[in-house]
Image 1 (cartoon, rainbow, N blue to C red):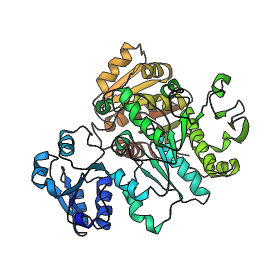
Image 2: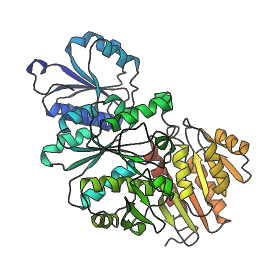
Image 3: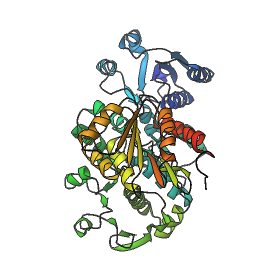
Image 4: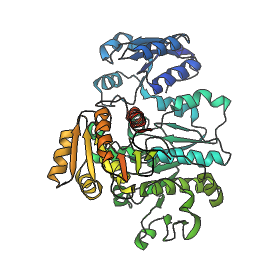
Length: 473
């Protein structure tokens, strides 16, 4: 982390690589504490030109269309204080390796934020799936109980933005969603509370092995003062004895699990804390067993902070589901359409499909991620009435399903627009249905991210269905 008050470094350069949200706020924060900042961004478009103009008004130099190559840094090595890289840049990138060999400090936006926010209470939340919901839910519970507990990090609000406005808003608890990319570069982070939601095969194109991915996630929990784990996750449960001491949650009504766990659900749908009833699940509206796991993790953290069961339950009544996560976007007497664009891998998709009552018609596709598709194929076989496949992975997914014995209708199309046109006709002849958008893949073949994909899906549905085929409630 750059030294804030070292006069010798006043004219040294802090390079920020990448002009996404995290890069923008890293640059803005560094400039606000008197640092000399240069931003390099490899892309160039109208939006970036506007951002460049905004930063240059703050005396920050911005170069668009500039590649992340060591040769560009080489003449400036003696002038560099730090290089702040985007989370999207792998930590084994050849330019990062060469910079570090030359003694250059290479950090992420999150390192800067930690150095300037480490005097407050952090809750660090990580996991393959579920971390965004736990982050948002826990922030809501704390905020509803008059604690200033902003959510930030991988969830969308850069941590440097929190640091930038810290002086104006004293923080009680910072609820930070932390991805493996962020943890990998910021080994300095030591949360008061660490939460580990799940671990499944994901991001292996970057982390290479599940063992290495596990190690990165675990490093955050090791550094946390208090730890909360999900016993329902097979990889975490399998490492129960080797993980650092903490408390565990489970939704499995099995007495053998209760012996290992501190929070569970009883057969009356009450949350139990070490044999004591806390509150009923009736106040929690999110679909799916995975969301009950998320609730238990958030509840365990809120209890550690000191909230009563009544205060936690009261906060749940006003909690609203995040977009693109089993989000009902259309409902009529004979059709419900659900947007689960956040299902970017097989495991996340499986949880969403299992959460749906009855047999949905499913839309899936995108850019295939690493991971074992076996359980996904079994789940589709068991639950799906029909499946529409689109995008880069459509033919691969079709072959997986056919090889797995799927006997019902499979339709392959190019993009979402084609899918919705075809689905519209298909549903006209099939009443009382649930249509579930559960991509099971990343969005990067046709979209910027899962959020843009979800928004496009919602717009297509609204345009095609609103007032045409069904009467909305």
